[in-house]
Length: 83
Image (cartoon, rainbow, N blue to C red; front, side, top):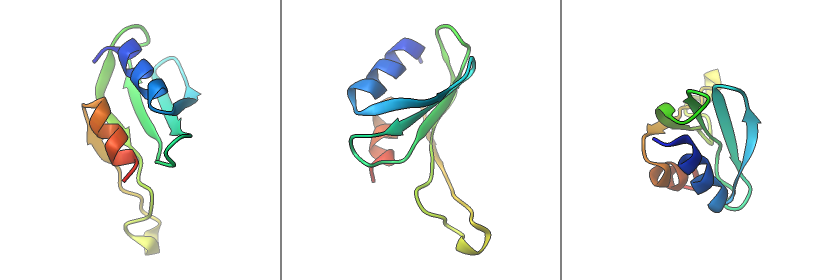
């Protein structure tokens, strides 16, 4: 996936860069009230691997375990974030 295109699509859909390093981005949904989306990249042009949609509620409350979803589609990641 193209890094610039991924970032632009997230910006257009109401996400803001919450935490960025030279190899990792985490984006926060300010428009739709969804969960964060994060991904690793090579620092220049390509996204490495899948986008991670962080879990909203703990699946195992006793252990405070939040399960996340992974997808390679930005559109699907945005939809999963806002479910």
